[in-house]
Length: 142
Image 1 (tube, helix red, strand yellow):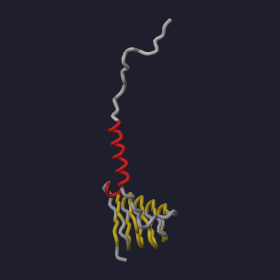
Image 2 (cartoon, one colour):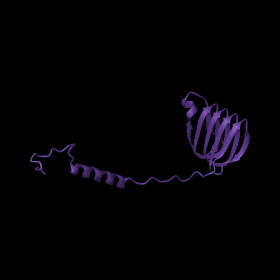
Image 3 (cartoon, one colour):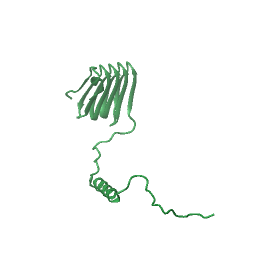
Image 4 (cartoon, helix red, strand yellow):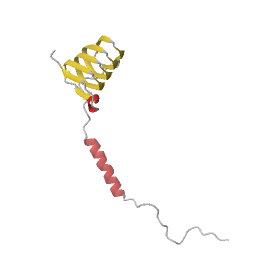
C-alpha cells in the first residue's frame, strides 16, 4: 500500500487575505492618537465619602454637608444644609432644601421639589421637568 504525503494540487487558501501593511498602519495611527491625547485634569474639588442621607416623610432637619453629597428622598421633607455641599440630589415629592453652598451639581427627580442655594455655581439637572413636572431650583441672595 502506498501513501502519498504531499498533494500535487495547489492548496486553496480559506478566508480573506490579510494585508499586513494596512494592519500595521492602522495600529500605528491608534498609538499616535492615544499618545497625543492629553490626560484630563481632575476637578479642583472632590466629593468625600460619607454622603448625608435624609430619607422619610415629613422630616425637618439641619445638616452639615461637610463637602459631601446631600441626598434627600421621600415626601414633604425640609432641610437646611450648612457649609458646602459637593452636590444635592432630591427624589420624591414636595421636598425643600436650602443650602449655604453647592459646588458641583443639583439633581432633582420628582415633583414639587425646591432647592435653593446661596453660593456656588452648580450644574442644575431637573429630571422631573424633563417629564413635565414642576420644580423650583434657583440661587437666592445670601
